[in-house]
Image (cartoon, rainbow over all chains, first blue to last red):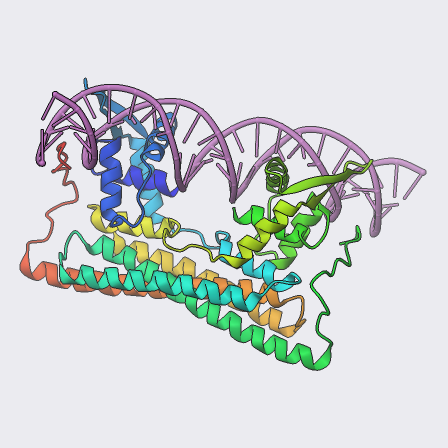
Length: 198
Length: 198
DNA sequence: GGCGACATACATACCCGGTATACATACGCG
DNA sequence: CGCGTATGTATACCGGGTATGTATGTCGCC
């Protein structure tokens, strides 16, 4: 419901039509997250269905201006007052991939980690460059949001890079202890333990 | 496509039916990400539609056993070989919320940050406790994947906590520089600049 | 012995987010 | 003048997430 609440919060500052909301949303996030315009309209339609917004008027040129309702304002307040729950963290493709990779036979996990680190570092460098460029034009007021978003992405990318290092170290440790007390897997076609009592 | 590829990779180890795949997936991720069984069936149906898996047989009790196809095996290999792209990072609700909050009038951003930090730290502590418990039973082989997932979640939570600290510091700095060279916003009901040239 | 609780197993409906595309008008510019 | 670009709305389709319905099997317990 992130999009819905975000648009609702923007409408809380005054009536607007779809295209305006898209522009306002992207301005806040510095263009990192281009919002698909179709999503704006479907989200507005759903919010209207749920009584959070209402059509203020429809101009002759087709512009549909929405305004927030009391229920919508209440919902925005509730959103800002309650934290984003982290007890059921979102599934992450990289984590899933690695979790499956380390337990699957015949996957070159080391290569996987290195390929991913390349990608992650490339992203990190691009973000850092963006941050340096942004610092050149210290537009203190309106750019704060964009700086925060940028730094969030940088923190995340750094955490991912550190995790990849950690994974590599753990794999090396595991390999060292495994090869010393058991024979390595002979080949990659181990299709055993496929019985029904999995 | 994370779920699809994950299930495909599991099927690459041998034929299985839906419920088995759910159990195997959750075992790999240590139960952090309980996979909804419905999603398994819809994902398998789509993978079958796309020729990545095929029904091996349907038992009398209704069990539908799937096996991976050559195209599916190829797809799994491609998945493991290519990195997860990070150039268009996933939208995060917390980041959106804060980006909107700092630019919206009448939002107590400081309270928002503190509430969120509570939640994030609670999550971090729960994860740390899980990790300590997991360390008690060092089942080196099968638990590696679960350890990796856990540590990924911990790294992410730590990054989020550090970012929240960072946000708070930046807000304090911005407030200090703003109050010294401009009058503070008189009230929270600024509904100006809503013209069409947004 | 039977009954309830729980695990196993499959299927469907619904919602939201993400993306592409269609279609129209306005505006600047070579 | 017309072509590209920006503005503007709308719809279709897909995948992921969640809830729910409906069986059967199993195990313990009164």
